Image 1: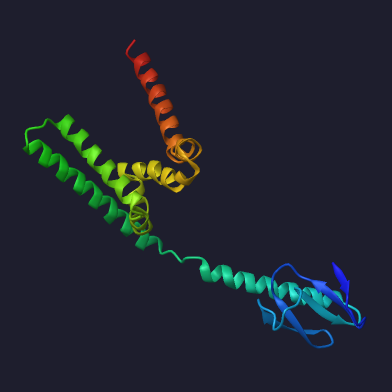
Image 2: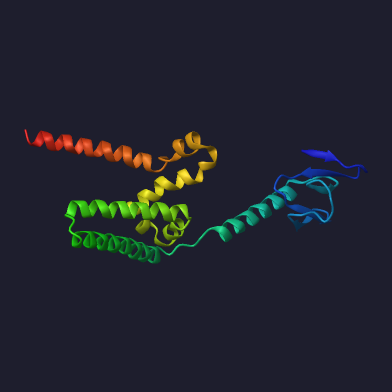
Length: 204
């Protein structure tokens, strides 16, 4: 979109990127950053005719600035370090679970009851840590080691409900609580039903 200048001496080019340019000489433009030096429209003043080479130069500079910004904010991951973190995090959760089972058994519970108690405690702990916004930090460090165990499943149920609670009980918590865990529950139940059916047919 071009707008004629007030004095009639040039042409204005409106940009939507928020980057301002000053003309140093004919066909040469210098970036002034994302803020103008004075209150004005987002525009570039061209004297005379506007060549395609000028627009290509501006476009390439905008692409370079955007790519530099993407490179700056994109986190750099170390695969082997992430693998070790996941192993350690998942191992710690499993050790805690085994300790809970051992304590429950030592108090006179059978293995099935001890396993149930372990699951309840781990799920409750994960939900509380999610509510206090602590579990995301564990996931950020431990990766799959924090997501794969039952604590990760509890986090996937609690996180959407907490995030959308401002929208109300029905459209906030009720409608989003199984956004992440829903597919896991659906296909987990479906897979178990199919496998159970196959097992039943093998017994005939």
